Structures are given as structure tokens and as C-alpha cells.
Amino acid sequence: MISVGCMRKDYTMTKVNMSDYGLSDRFMALAKEHEELTAARIISQEKGLYRIVSSIGEQFAEVSGKLRYNAASPSDFPAVGDFVMIDSISPDDHAVIHTVLPRKSVFLRKAAGTGNEEQVVAANIDTVFICMSLNNDFNIRRLERYLSVAWDSGASPVIVLTKSDLCDDIDRYLYEIEAVAFGTDVIVTSAIGEDGLEKLLPYITAGKTVALMGSSGVGKSTLINGLLGENRLDTNGLRNDDKGRHTTTRRELFLLKNGGIVMDTPGMRELGLWDAEDGLSKSFSDIEELASMCRFHDCSHTSEPHCAVRAAIERGELPADRLRSYLKLKAETSFSEDAQSYLAEKKQKFKNIAKENKKAKR
Image (cartoon, rainbow, N blue to C red; front, side):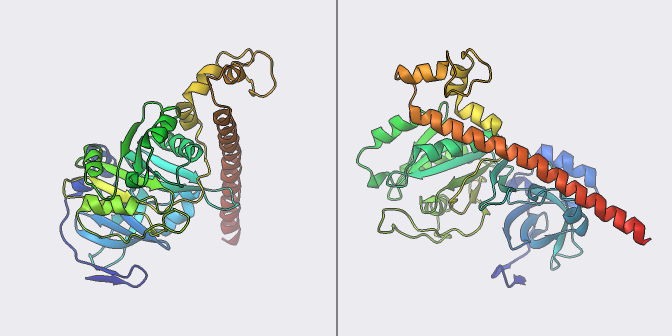
């Protein structure tokens, strides 16, 4: 048994078939480039300590000093969902993570707060369930944010509407979603019925990873408990303002009986965009198509003559709120691109200084 205080759990070492945890032929080929190491997947993380699963079972791991030193940004560190290469003398020891294998998808956001750093929310996911409850939590502008980041991640978004039993006019919400979520599947669920859960299962097939994301209290943990068939995650009811209480405190992977993998994530109070230009183009394809017909290729859609976007608003074909949302998100991602370049240069500058100082000491 392994016991680590900060995790407050014990784990029994058992042999594991890593294909059950999504180790596909693609990742196996990448892993063969590190023959002296063992492939593993990050299951959860807490305060710099990782829980991983490999062919020998579950154990805890820390990043190597070399990986830490070479990391140019926070996204270079392992995140939940990552496949990594480890070495471990015995199952009872902490493993050491030497390499993060190239990701097939990554859900990035601007880290909460005032700093200009990116944060990996989830890695190597196939589908993102964007969860929104059909009560006061519903916000179409927030949905546009999630769709932009989800499309940019490389995974496929699916909108999951929860707590339908609390809603008297579902069609109104569906109408709003159809106006902004082009080509995105929408699933309506309720905690008091199993129909919604059955609709989710086709997306969570063997070896596929699905991440549930959304605001605090929208019912992500309730859905995962339903999929697991047991109450493994804590859930809370509604507050007085008709919003759910925050329960999940960390990201964690769970293996379902059908072989699918789900990731629970804490509710995100902020979802700042980080270099999500491609995702914006996909989620706002209607505006981008109109923009291609503007007289000026760099039209800001504010005051220029012959602006096709503003003309569509005047004709009632495009909501003005949607344009405002697009321009706001466009400005955010442009700022993050500038910040990303600046931070990378700054990080490399200090690395070069450190190397020169080492040479001087010799």
C-alpha cells in the first residue's frame, strides 16, 4: 500500500493494461523513443505531486529536476490526462517524470488572476462536455467562450444541459444555443432520470477520454457518479440564488466499466482565452464569413464604411450582442498571443543568464 498524507488515500498496486487508459498506438510509438523509461498517464494532481497509472499500477510521481529546469512555461509541466515517461525502482517509491509525450489535444486557458500565464486544464481529451444548467447559471456568452476554447483544444465539444427538471421552457434555451453553436451536439439531462446518461455513453467509448467542464455546481460530479454507477464524488444541492455549490477541488480521471474515461474538473470562475484564434474562427464562423465580405480586410466592424457585419446587424440577421462578444474574445486572444511571446523571451533570457553564471563559476 502507498500512503501519502496530502492525497489522503491508499492505493493497491495491481497490473494495468494501459490501453484501457487511452494509450493508443500513437502514444506507444512515441513512448518507444524512450526505451529505458515506462509510459504512464497522469490521473490527478495536487500541490506538485502527481498520481499516475502505469503497467505496474497506480503510484505517485514528481517531475525530474531537468524537466523542471527546461520548462519554458507552465504548459510544459505535466497535466491531468498527459502521457508521461517515468522511471521507478519499485512500486512503493515515488516515480520520477522525465518527459511529457506530445499531446494530441490540450484545453488551455489564461490562468486565473492578473498574471499573464497559460494553464492546462486538460490534456489528451477526445471530447469536451460543456456543462450548463438550465436555471440561473445559463449564460449564452459564457457558452461562446467555452466553445471557442474547446474547438481550439483539438477536441470535439458537446453541450450538455443539466437540471432539465428545474426548467419549464427548454425550447427557449435550445433556440438560443442553436444560434451560436453551429455543428455542435446538444444533450439534455436531468439528475432524476437515466435517459440523459444513456445519451452521453456513445461519446465515452473504450479508450476515449471525455472531460466535463463548466461552472461550479452545474452537476458535473452528479453526472460522473451516474456514469460510474456509484456515489464516488461529493455533490451539493442548490444555494438560495438557484446556483449550485462548488464541490470538485481537483481534476481527476475515472475509468468507467465500459472502458471509457471521464475527467472531472473544478468549476471555473474565469475562462480567459489564451491564443485561441483557431477556436474563435470555428465558433464564430458566421461573423468571420460576413467579415470576408467587408470592403476592408482589416475592418474592425465598428465605424468603417461598407462593413458587412454591421449591415447584417442592421438587417436583424446578427445579434449585436454576439458581435460584442466576438470582439471582446478577439481582443483577449490577441493580448495573450503578445504576452506569450514576451514571457517565452523573458524565460529564455534568464536561462541564458543562469548558464553564463555557471560557466563563470567554473
